[in-house]
Length: 268
Ligand code: URA
Image (cartoon, rainbow, N blue to C red; front, side):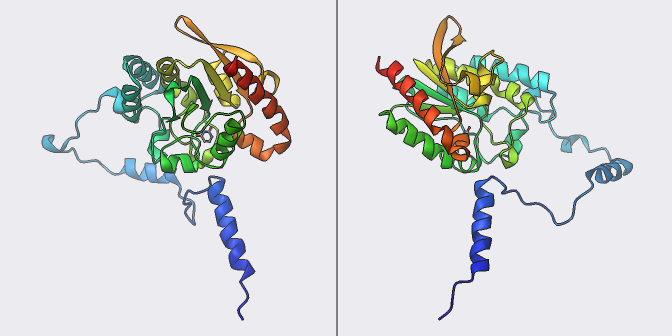
């Protein structure tokens, strides 16, 4: 009888754990000194391209080298010009001003039912969301769906989900303030077009990006706040991010309190 090789199992579960944690980028065995490469490149004389082979100049909004202020203005313009959710999705997919798009597999726009009146907003896609092109479809999405089911809200029917950022930050790192600012016009327009009755902000990034308050999630979770768009004010409640609840299960008690608060608001 051959016994299973415990070492092999360990390797497999280690690998699965790394993929689940977002460490799925290939890293070279030896570090590459990119400063040296750059020096080498610039030391070599460049030959001018014949007129016909020259690349067409890209408009600023599509260039990857554009500076953030230009990209910010272009995101603002593109978002404002979108009159429907379909147009907004296309505008985001065509926007090259945020470098996160270069490393992401997909643009993650939304999932769920627009007409449900309930919009949930997270931070940014993780590895599974990037693969599938849909928000909250990994482990934290599973917990989120279970939490919503506990207050009688059915997946893909009774709520609608999106994120502050439509692209996955490499290795699931926290999006930088510049990346958040760049993508903010899109989620703001997204909220405006959906015009939900209630917003749930999942985690500190969604809270600080959309509401102008200095207090953190631990202090303001579970309290009704206001999100203003144009002339309308939408009640918004912040709660702990499901990924955080997976790491800190003792906080689920507070999350349950927040869910009941949301249920009361929606039922009332
Ligand atoms: N975390 C988020 O904030 N959003 C997702 O879509 C997935 C995980």
